[in-house]
Amino acid sequence: MYTTVECYNKVKKDCFKFLKSQETKTNKFKNKNKMLKSYLIPICFWITKKSNKKSPLIIGLAGGQGTGKTTITSVIALILKKYFKLKVFKISIDDFYKTRSERKKLSKNKHALLITRGVPGTHDYRIINKFFKKVKNKKFNNFRLPKFDKSKDDRCHKKLWYKINSRPDVIILEGWCVGAKAQKNVEIAKPINSLEKTKDPDLVWRKYVNAELKTHYKNLFKKLNAIIYLRANNFRVLQKWRIKQEKILFLKSKNKKNLRIMSRGDIINFMQTYQRITQNMFKDAPKYASIVIKLNSNHQINSIKFR
Image (spheres, rainbow, N blue to C red):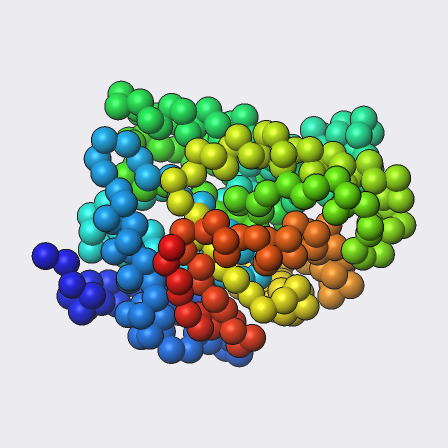
């Protein structure tokens, strides 16, 4: 019989060690005990109840930029492996970005903004679909998935790709737009920021991204068994967290010489491409997500709600 206290005692050392590895001198995790006991361990119990050995449980974990998706995914995976003895594979939708050359073609054929990675239409959803289909097979073995290098803005060499040698019990696909839904055409007509107003006056980019959500991404997200959504208070908070995240990336990087770090202005401009879908998810995702994790302005988990 699993218990929260027993689980906490079993995993706390490894979880705290991982969280410490993500800290800097000026950026420390607070209330780590509560984060584990009150929020992340209960989520792991919920996942374990949903999982079965017949077929992998595929979970989408979504949240705006800077919400801590990768950190929370990593801790959940650690707990599921350490205490519940489940085989877990986690990957970001970012790893499925199209190559830079593919996005260059897309930007020439469709719209110049599509050179910028991020929005639906800039991922190779076919690879994800192929993986989800193959992993359902009982004879599944030896599958490779891409890894993306954001510092180079391109896909890594194949020798660095993820190797999955056996079928996982749980798969976690994390990403800012995971589970996002398309808007009505009338809703995308009015620009919501300066980028949409000046760079997409004829709605070509917005219509393309929305059409991708309505078709290819809708079909992809249907394959998810559950969605966990990290809910921040507003978009301005996300901008603040993303700027902080970039600073941490620089501080923790060992190879600063070749690292392409964005300035505050670069980040704010970059995030404008994410703003529409992010703000739409603020409104809609809590209605369909299986679990909503609410974050306060201090970047801490404030509450969780199970549906």
